[in-house]
Length: 80
Figure (tube, rainbow, N blue to C red):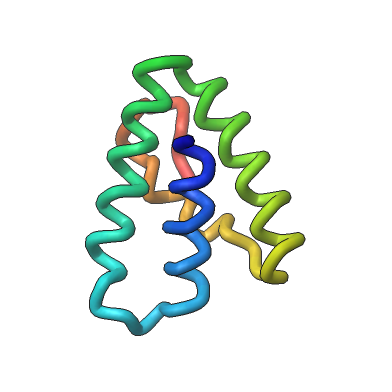
């Protein structure tokens, strides 16, 4: 469920970089990252982003790696 939400959020941010909704979408991406970390630590963040990157790159041809930094600050182990 969180993966699908993140797919939608990241895809929106990548396809609509000038949208006024971007700050809200990025805030939700950060919140989901905190939820993932609380449930599974940094491994959960790494595994989720790996899956997200592969799927988004395949589906829309854009790399979401620039958005990895939205999870900075959740843990010192995640610093992009």
